[in-house]
Image 1: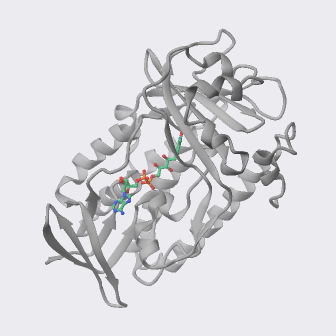
Image 2: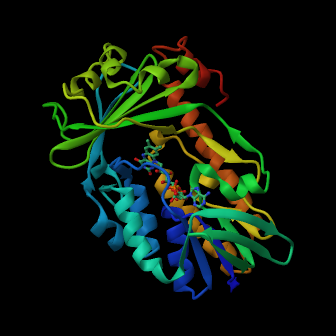
Image 3: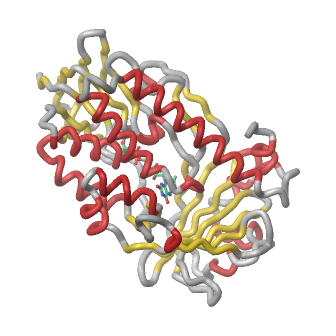
Length: 358
Ligand SMILES: Cc1cc2nc3c(=O)[nH]c(=O)nc-3n(C[C@H](O)[C@H](O)[C@H](O)COP(=O)(O)OP(=O)(O)OC[C@H]3O[C@@H](n4cnc5c(N)ncnc54)[C@H](O)[C@@H]3O)c2cc1C
């Protein structure tokens, strides 16, 4: 039996950043790292300039900058009208750049830091929580492991392994799904930045530079459009994007090896924390990728969770209320953003957002 203070389930960015922050304060903890089941694809995620301030405050800026694909200085978009809009980050303060990252590379670097705290497993067998302690049993290559802790943290992303085991209801605010693939890099003469977003009748899409020769294209839609069945086949993308101004021009003749689909909707549990448990990152609140704030949220919730687990002046109840407030504000901003696009307000995809309150 392993005895520790904090058991973190999940070794994504949220779980690993929490581990690093607890390690700095010498808080005994274990990160339960499930052997990878899900398919992964490099998505060249964006960290906006606002995230640099948080990283600097947490003394993580160097680690993220050194591991990032590159700095990013802005993006282009067509949203709400046919006109292309450009956002340059050099208007931002104090950081005039964001980062393009490969989540997997950042995770690997953070994992090296957390090495001595990581416990691998391939099967989670049981979680038992009482007011005094948390007991968990796992299996690793048929060998049973028992871990006992004072607190347990759900850092399993949208899977929400702990929250499901606690039977906490999850609220889903839309049905956004994503389809991503790698295509050869193409540059448009009017675009100085290598991130471009455009909406269309059945959803929206983004192209983002990954490396010298490759870019990632992701299209977002919802189940109620029926498009999700067609988007698994790249040969349909040309027809789906036929009315876009630029997005269609990025499509390649070659068929990509893989199209990776997944959930991308906004969701949150009814409660983000209890007596001796809490959720962080996507498990606590899953953001729409349009916000580019999912990873910032993973880092921020890990930071606040570390305070709730360490400082007596900041309780789990404070954490729960603060995070709920952030999620309410996020939903308001997101809905307003979607409602700025009125060109297809009667289409199934956009109608959903128009019916939501702002
Ligand atoms: C298509 C797409 C594009 C995105 N683009 C951006 C972007 O540009 N910028 C941005 O900031 N965010 C972006 N995001 C969101 C961002 O990726 C997430 O918000 C962020 O990775 C959440 O981190 P996390 O640690 O909470 O969860 P995750 O990264 O999901 O990590 C969870 C971990 O838990 C593990 N796990 C799952 N189930 C279990 C279990 N039962 N037991 C143990 N472990 C388990 C998983 O294997 C994983 O390692 C995007 C998301 C999508 C879908």
